[in-house]
Length: 402
Image (cartoon, rainbow, N blue to C red; front, side, top):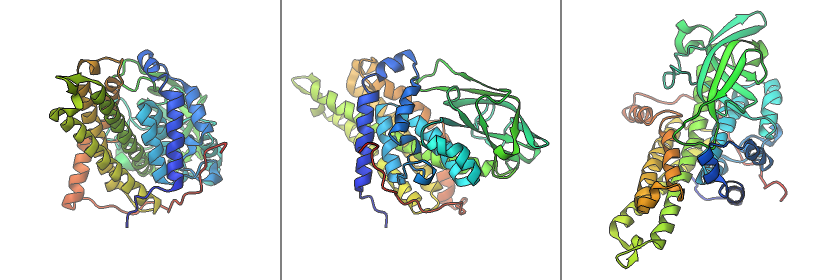
């Protein structure tokens, strides 16, 4: 039976994350977003709170949170701004959890431990200028050269690209094999031939870094390979399951922020002698926000429960991501409508919510891809096979300093 009861630990994480957001993010985010400023020192503070190793076992420097706590953390961070949930998705979900699942003990000690402690920042590099959803068709290549590989290619739309220390990069050792040639490597900033840059002019998530990675004959030792040759596609897909979970949880937080802002404004603004919240069509928009947000939260928590049991959850996580991200976009649109002309100004946060919401229906699998995934499950065309999943009991996370 799925249990949606929040434990004391879950509530402690919620309180800590909300307090962090209210003290460190919300007072400054309008200015940071307007100027496109990325403040890496905030990530360091997140590390001090134990957030950058949230679901990583304590044995590897993490906080040992269960996945419900991890979902709550992502929700609370995106309730403040998407940029700070993104670091949970990329650093933790896509990179650190992939290392935990697929790395050797030596690799975990070398890269996972400092990442979980917040001493190093990590990212995930799969997308290319010509490759997004078609992840088995990578143009980036890895050529074996003695005790090393030579990597060549370019990655694009990589979150944290220009500020990360570690890069989980996917390249093909044999492009004729399509997805069966994809192989995973851990690269480090400073390797010869590895350069990065930032993208500018983004619609949203302007307080977060998004960029590109250039690989010009980068020598990568064999011991930096994660898994076996040809196992990279499976590693990437299992990592994306983790990333999608964090995106879904964050989208619930963004929808909640839209609802909170709309309720506040609907009480404050008056037309025709009464609060606009008393008008039926305003109520309709607020009710739609509330219902969809609760639905998204329950879908995320169901996926979290499965993950805590060590059960495969690709279908459930896909559904949560699909619903929550689409609902976040609609909630942002409705929130602007509730605010009227004021919603079109950055004096109110809802215009930022709309700009931020749009990315999530594209990355970690477009809404169109998730539509197909859910249809294939429903029609019986697709079924899950077991992966390396293990139960994930909570380890008694406490707020640092408590």
